[in-house]
Image (cartoon, rainbow, N blue to C red):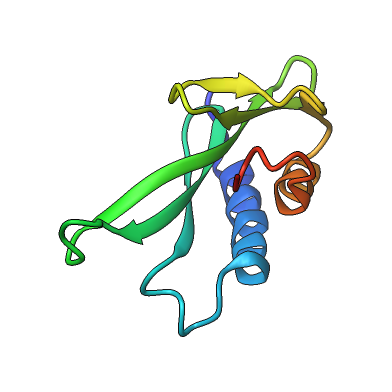
Length: 115
């Protein structure tokens, strides 16, 4: 089941607050920015950069994902490995809230999300 409209509003507000806090300074935004997508039951965080061979085009690279499981009221945490597949974030594969997921990504204690 997809997120409800009110859930999407809350998720967007939480993600927008995260981006305001984590976004690079204004003078760097043309070279690196962050964005997110919300799908049926998950959110993904992305880096947005100019393409190396054509700076007029943007490259969007996902780096963190949280999938919501309503039946257990938990978020499963994933990171994108070099094989370009999502893998469970083994130090903390499950969190209770979206805010806790974003805190893990910000801390990046094991350098999985931002390398």
